[in-house]
Amino acid sequence: MDIVHIKDTTTLTIKKMISFVLSHNNLDVQNIRGQGYDNANNMRGKWNGLQVLLINDCPYAYYVHSLAQ
Image 1: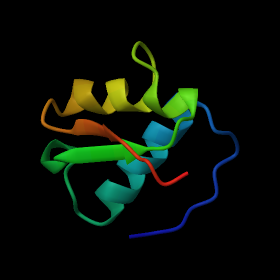
Image 2 (image 1 turned 120 degrees about the vertical axis):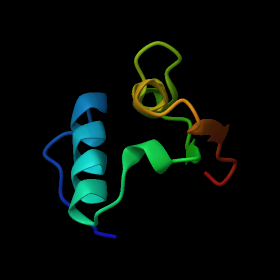
Image 3 (image 1 turned 30 degrees about the vertical axis):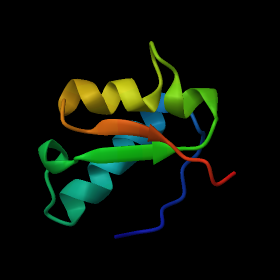
Image 4 (image 1 turned 180 degrees about the vertical axis):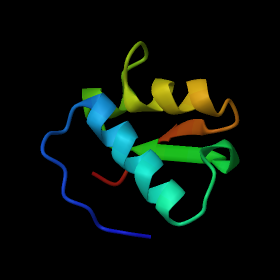
């Protein structure tokens, strides 16, 4: 995988970079089966968080809250 620099931490920017990194490594977002984030609103928001955007692309990418904070 990669470590990439992003200009901001908005949900759309993070999603675009995840999609870019997956594509760059010949991986398909449809194959994501799980996602876990800390308690940040831009990651876990029920209506417009990153978890929702990824689930819209891949309904099998279940969200699990990370307890390691």
